[in-house]
Image (cartoon, rainbow, N blue to C red; front, top):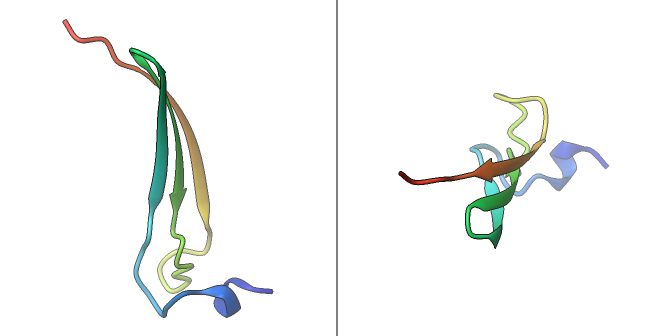
Length: 57
């Protein structure tokens, strides 16, 4: 199975993310980039895990 055989369409980008706030100021986010496998512009599928602390003043 290759990226070309499982691609949804012939181009473009599709990114998705899930964010979970488990306490008031702390967030965990999982990002998925290039889900359409656009091999003409990018050669890879990318995942990111972000931990974010937000404090307003």
